[in-house]
Image (tube, rainbow, N blue to C red; front, side, top):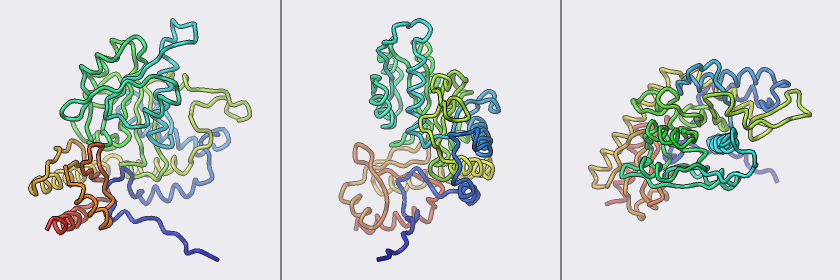
Length: 364
């Protein structure tokens, strides 16, 4: 029996996602490149050229010293990019003086780091040393300094944490890593398309970071999947390369083989349409919405974390949170149970007013 054609979920009440509606130009470009595979660039030359443009665009917003010559690729998302950053640092650690092939390698990351680093540590057989954050939910440099040692291959910094939207003190962490002989990775998967329009230090120009994760399919308004991994120098990706004897291209540095040509094309189309003014307007609007929502929740007596990027966290009781979910709001909670609202481009002031109206009705 024929079933009704399924429809995608509306974003009207989605407040928890770090993905959003793709830009119309990105949607159209993705459809044109649905059958192409950037994992075989010698065969799919057009999408390979687009991927080079995508990397240059991401490198431009991350202030790479030479964006046209930047190294990187379009990943399936932040998880793949973070795993690859760990893998690259592991492979390069001690490469000049270790001939045994046996190394006890660790990665130091703040407690605010994305759970993809837990996956990376398990997959790559490295020790993940998670250190505390400070009272503002940012990495504590003293804790990081105490955790690094000769076995530290990578120090992770977060630029737009998933729970609280915080930016770590990246120049301080980079200095600690440099002294320990470790590399630095900045996870800006969500924050990367917002941070260029702030005064935060996070980019290649702000500190000697080695690799950066930025996802076009988040605030970049590209279709899913379209993540991004950037590196300061070619050696970071060279450390990931494996032979691909049956392809026309003879090596491959990516984690997955077949990849999404739709994601590559959509990312380029979104950046062509929106960089820089469209992204600036979206970031400023989102920041205004976050500040407004935080103030409204504080006026209602909730304990609210002051937004740094457009993400609002407030201590809403479990009963009220459950009622909001029952009313159809797709909100989420932090690890401590607080309400978490991400002010993405699809989240309008009217949406937030409707959310507060429902919250007020629940509180009566």
